[in-house]
Length: 434
Figure 1 (cartoon, rainbow, N blue to C red):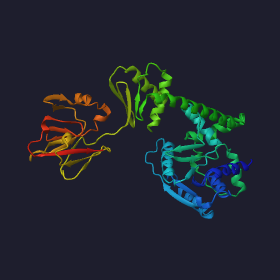
Figure 2: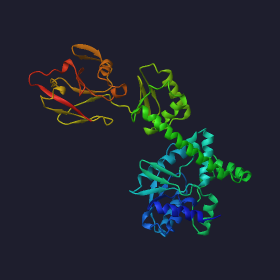
Figure 3: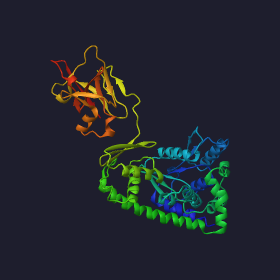
Figure 4: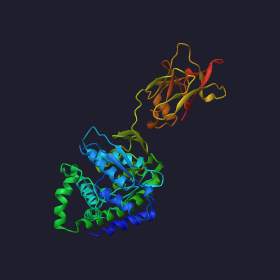
């Protein structure tokens, strides 16, 4: 196998980037990647850092850690060691991956890129797993060679390099690496594909890996083209990042709406829904398009429909719907980053000017109030007041209403009740700041 391919890839990388953090497991792939970085003349050692993440799932983790320490000491590379602990072992691979990337990205310095040792065989396994799950273009485009997450760059320089080339490089350079025994456990889908499936496929079709990579590139190009088309479409109906106008519901095709909804959810950095759930979402929106209001609750977020609007919001529950405001001399912080309340003595601020509580009255801050309010000498249901002041349903639960005992007094910056009228000089202002 031609190990010059590895040198060429690292040389290309060195011309564009100067500072590197390598995800270093101590296995043959990441050891080869680290060694090839060190040997490149364009890259200074002081700009290479390695990070080892101990998943604490094997009895051999201390041996692996020691191997990483020894290699980094020998090559004079700074090593960061971090730990992951997972109690619930169901879907362990996915949980480890999420935690691992969170740690990796958190440890990236300014102008530093994260590099991982994913290779051609990994790509093939990933695409076959995507086929098993029934994924669309995104899944079939496989692992991305370059990825940007929250302005942080991840590069996978070995993605078009065969595993055999990596093994050959490691042997020629007398590298030492660890072997994770869990890689032989075929109860994990990826290992089953690697050990039982791929060797038979490659034996029958030797160019299979090359064809898979070609398929992933075609799917990626089609995905990017589709993203461009949907981006143009979504611009027409995006009021805010989390607010969508669905007045074109009957004018556009279902397939377009499915893609728009997926893009919109992704835009708001929420968990990606499966095609099954996105179809359910579209069906409910389309079926209930004449309904003025309804909501769909998912695992981590809620989608609200109100008239011709769709709103997406993180699922947050205020644990305590009632807060007692004991010390009015200090501002009080409200939950879920709503803001804070404070008292201000200003008779010129008529909007929030209210009477002070009597000696026997306790000040309560209430959320999600469902009762009636005395306003403008009328007893009106709170829902009607929200509608009057054009407060959307998804905003209502996070709006504080001030009570003196059981009497509603004021909703700062929105309305005052009949019970709020100040008498003589016995007044103050309750201000809400975001």
